Image (cartoon, rainbow over all chains, first blue to last red; front, side, top):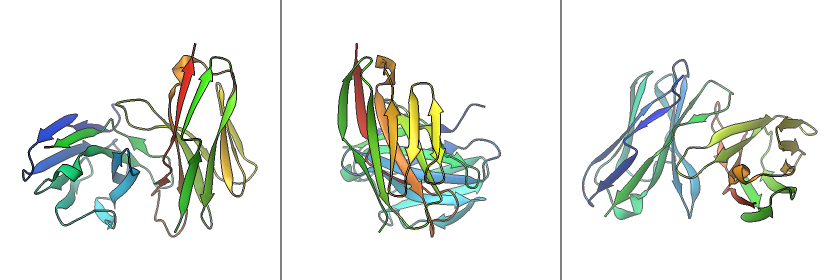
Length: 112
Length: 112
């Protein structure tokens, strides 16, 4: 199994631009999570899906953030417009119900 | 609000010098406590799940234990390759499914 695959690995963009992060979960996993990691706040849960349905998006910081999961093998996290304070490492993780989560290697986002 | 606190923030050990990392939590109805290892530039990698007080899990030089208020990750005779950030996370109602809340982590450096 290739594990959770995220793209791109690095993204540098200017303030105000739209950013789209992509995630391919492990086949067969029915839960998908988006986390953000910074030095100041650690790992924060943004949103999670179960069976492609958003269950809890209370961690999404603002309306500038949106996430979709059109099918079981793909999810996107979009930031529009991006701001410098959005700079962080964004992780996608997948799992089966009540099982440990498996993380991708993240997308390092830098907004200048 | 549920909280997960890890200590120390950073730990420097000599190769072979055993020690312990602490994870204290304040949740009601703990469903599971998870330990992850994170290497620079990578996503968290699952190590252990503990479900009830008194439970212990071992993997190579690592041993995780759980009480009603905290968990310890004991590292016996560490090697430089054990250097990483160690994260603990809890899963508890009313959290749905396998949603996890993470601590800030302990950065471990083992010198040869």
